[in-house]
Image (cartoon, rainbow, N blue to C red; front, side):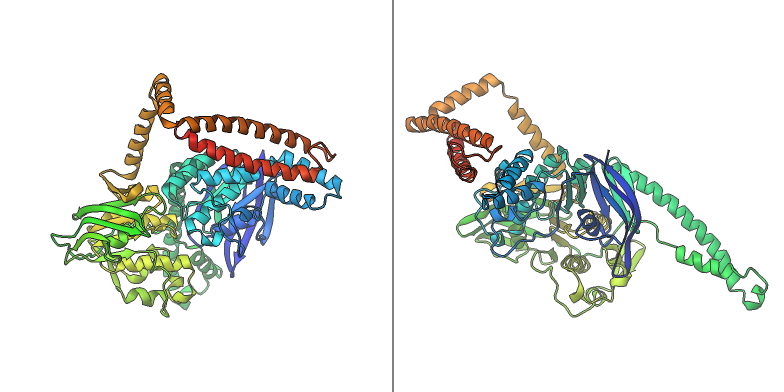
Length: 620
């Protein structure tokens, strides 16, 4: 059954049509990826579905009772908002029911409404909203932060909190706009697994190809103002898209042939055309208007004119760095040779950016030595120089760096053409840098790094502001780059296509070198973990008994037993209170308002007891 149907939906922004006459339908439980070039209107499309923006024309119909929640790219919150209060500012029926119930509690004289809101809470499992939110935060690696101000969290932590909120809402339809931005690979893989098993209808915008291929079974392609529906995997989509582009190219070739003949007739002069078809000139103009560039500008090869590397490129010996007494990088040594292309992976906050900053000389190490070759020229796409401040236009800015770029043995292009390959169409070249969005400035900064004629590229999360076609061009550039490359990225497909080796950052600041691509290394790690789980159950039980004998003191064993009894007692009281919420009459536990307060106090106490029980259980 269709849960979402669109009929002839159109939208124009700033006098530019984003999409026209879009019609399609989705079934309940469909997982769909919406892809397209930057500026095609993907985020706008999601906002129209969410009801944040109205379409210019057409109709959008949803199944009755659809509970839609959207995760936007940016995380917005009120001043002095805490992680706890941020949850209740979210959308969705479950959060709305919680807020309505709290309002009803503050007006106990309206018993009918209190009963109504209690029943709604019961039907939506609203009683567990906050515990579900807390549990999701824990799974995302965020503990004991409920009272933390949102403004004090890092961008990655804020994104995790926003993800926990939309998932805790338990919607039936979920819209996700670039959910993987600012997340580490471990978190992305957790979310991948969570969403893959979700019964909700999901529409997501992402440039992470592994993520969309795992989560989604249908591709919606937004291209040239039209939306094309491609059932199947991302690989199936690429095949169908290639076939469509071939058909369009044949039509454009046919049109070009006719145009050449018609334009030749047009050039023959007025006398030669007298008495001819009076509508012929109009048809020529119409054909000129219908001519289009088919497909994206995919560059098949790059041969950047990089400077020659010397015998010594970059040599690090026993580098270490600590902040506030906490070691981030410990005893790192490595000698770079020509052609090394290494990906840097690790959790958020593990020191990936610190490692790049030290290796290019931007940050002094606490100990160790760094020897940079005399011919080594870095191009560092870092996190501090991205928000360009300049009074120049886009084209003026890049032409100061280089006016021409060598792309292949016989291909030299202008700086303007190079800009087009990285998502800046000709219409933008005269735009002032000051008018660009943050994402456009960061993309322009990336182009400037590539144009600077380096022989050692360092790229810190370069894919965040790139669409898929532009990312493919960057991948090709790196593959053809003859110097050294060091890349920090959460995009696993990008790492696999650009890097042959890895630096894996681990706890305690250690950096492990792996002579494998990311997917090969990950598969090896998962295989090793699977073998550990295959230990016979009897052996596990024996080991557990030995651990129990050694792990807990006598006093802790007594406490552990008492905690189990306490958890059982608290759970029984909570069950009794939950059963009493079906009616508003006063019971031996008090009025409905008093019972609700007792319930929340017991839940909080149970959480504390369970936390202590888990601490002791880890010693078993």
